[in-house]
Image 1 (cartoon, rainbow, N blue to C red):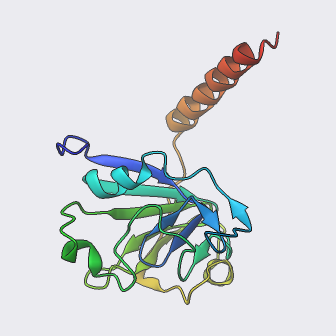
Image 2 (cartoon, rainbow, N blue to C red):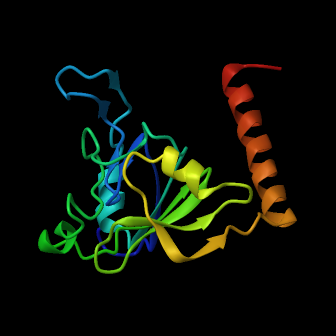
Length: 172
């Protein structure tokens, strides 16, 4: 990664803020957390060393927060401008994929804005489940559904993963 050979990194998030910083360490005060999470596990390096980052998460007001409780993986900084000031040369979080929509950083501010809604999802639902006053792109798309081939690949991956876990557990 540090050599610049990884063009896209994928990260999950327990919390994500409006400027793409991710928390996977603690919910609440670090010294006395409400919940202790798995931690970074290399995510900080992915966030700063991969050419660009795609983040995925369930879209909830508790997860999509104005400010993360702890910065595990750096996005664009608390006001959207700190990444370059710190000498981080990679693009950072260029896409956030949730179960409701797609968000991308707005040019100039790097604030995440909704650029595409999944079928059947409304602006009102996304706003209600976002912990900041979320904005929507002037041209709002509807997310393309997965193709039959993409679904087939995902189902096969799920099947093989479950099979491997059964084998590890000694299940028949």
